[in-house]
Amino acid sequence: MKSFLVWTFLFLGFAGLVGAFSTWFPGTNPAVLRNAPDETADIVENLKRHIEYLSQDLGARDKPNVVEDAGRYVAAKLGTCGPDVKQIDGTSGKTIVVEVPGTRYAREVVLVCSHFDGPRGSPGADSGASGAAAVIEIARALAPTSHERTLRFVLFPDGASRGSKPDSAATRYAKECVTKGETIVAVVYVDSIGLFADKDTQSYPFPLMLAYPGKADFIGIVGGYGCRDLTAQMTEFMRRYAGMPVQGLVLPQFTPGSGFSPHAAFWSEGFPAAVVTDSGTYRSPLWGTASDTHDRLDYPRMGRVVVGLTRSIAQLVKKVATSI
Image (cartoon, rainbow, N blue to C red):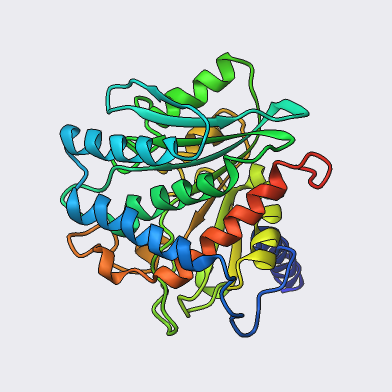
């Protein structure tokens, strides 16, 4: 009996340490949502235009010709941000890249990524369009200015269909970064960021339901165990700048489902990567379905996420202000 109690105590202690490591992060969530920052008004309108075009005007972005049209739109919008747009050919379409060289530490690169395709048969308003729209708006704010580290925006054509599979654009791109010997200090992958609710609609697999709230009013920052420093840093920044609840989480990189998204391609190459997400199917069973339409999204809160990300990434590209 004594041996059983000792092993139970040790197991519970170990589980508590793992839980704290996985879910405790610096910063304080606001008890009451603050007023949206002043700059969200223009961002909200821009997000609506981007997402309505990608999800409604183009529709399901699961065919080569539609993905190509989406890529042209994304490239055109990024082209207005100042730097030249580079387009990398691939089997699934063109990867769109915009780079702002660092002024002091150009070899140290911060990547801000998403994808512009969508799930099969779905408008993909939250799944695909919301992340791409966010990256466009972050680039619009940060690309015209100089930064100590190199800032690079990358949008993939097959994130919904191929994720981090060996033939995906993200996998090829991450391997190319290794081949070039690039120093990628942070990858911020913006996934689905448009669904919110002020009631208990959130669901989780065991044991996450023991640690996270049921109210679907937060944005999540998720990383692998090897990316805890970046995940903690982004969680702290977002809690400071986004004006809304932010939940951080690190998971083993072999956790089912965590390795499909394109960010996992960077994990595989040893680069620190964190995903910004509303949690997708855990937020709504309609995510990625035919009902994933633009009118279901919460644009004001999405605007807060984009403002928070813009300010957080501006910190990441400061060499002295951050320690990744």
